[in-house]
Amino acid sequence: MGVETARARVAASILDADLGNLAYAVGRAEREGVDRIHLDVMDGHFVPNLTFGAKTIKALRRRTRVPFDAHLMISEPGRYVDQFIDAGCDSITFHVEIDEPIEPTLRAIKAAGRAAGLAVRPGTPLAVLEPFRELLDIVLVMTVEPGFGGQSFQRSTAEMKVLAARQLLRHKVHGGEVHVDGGINRETAEIVGGLGADILVVGSALWLKGRDMAREIRLIRALADEGYQFTLNGGVPPIPRDKMVAFAHLPHHLAQVLEGEVRAGGIPVLRFRAGLAEDPSIAPDDELLIPATVERIAEERHAARRAELLAEGDAWKAAGRPLVGPPPPAPRPRPRPVRRRSAAT
Ligand code: DX5
Ligand code: ZN
Image (cartoon, rainbow, N blue to C red; front, side, top):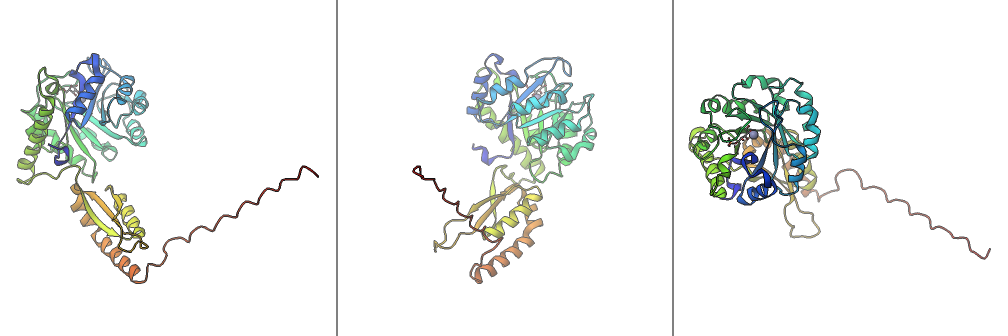
């Protein structure tokens, strides 16, 4: 299955891969079709186990193009966050149950242009995330006690928190993600999919000896989407996460205006030249594309404005496409030729 048809995404936790050959492990995970690499960092203090740190992640970063999600199970994320940013993590998630201020670390992650997340142990109520919700791109729901791979999935924790975590991220029109971590496999994927999980973190189930990893990834994604379709979505197949749809077709200068307004509301936009016009002296219109998952919201918010700009575009064309925008810059004065003094004088 092409991932572009799916809603759910699989992040491979490399905790149970061959730690003696991690470069091979991430390369293999990529080839087998995983969507993300999930990096479990443990400090032997926040959890009773030690793994690897930013330096290892930085070395792995060069080995694959798959996005990196860091899951920091450490007591002092604030002290190390810059190292994880520098290592090339695309998202950084740390635990809310720490004894240091949370907000500065979330802000540092966001200032670096990475996605910021908070994780909760099974016993921690989601309500503790409430003060930080505006800063959150990711909520990571742990369905095992953090520290070790291969534990069994805590279904009641998932049922209590996963849907609620989606609610917590409702301010994110696009891009907010609920990650579910711990005990995910083909037996549990359908349950978490049916609770609206966006990213399924899968560790031991991918690395079992003799297992066909590619098939396992496809199965887990498909089961999660099945759960979503029949538990949450009234039998309607989920909208694929990467599908883009056309939103507007406007002259260049007006397309730029609409693009800015749609983006300002948190919806990503792609703008293309809409193909060559029949008359090559006429610049083609621009085409705006948006993610299909937010099409309804974009229509609600921006359809009226789009109609206004369309009418403006038609009037502009009818008027013979007069120049728009600031006048072109005046030509720069030519540099005076340097007169060389003749050597003879
Ligand atoms: C546990 C980690 C998880 C875990 C996933 O502390 O955060 O990422 O290792 O492994 P499985 O899928 O085996 O539970
Ligand atoms: Zn993890």
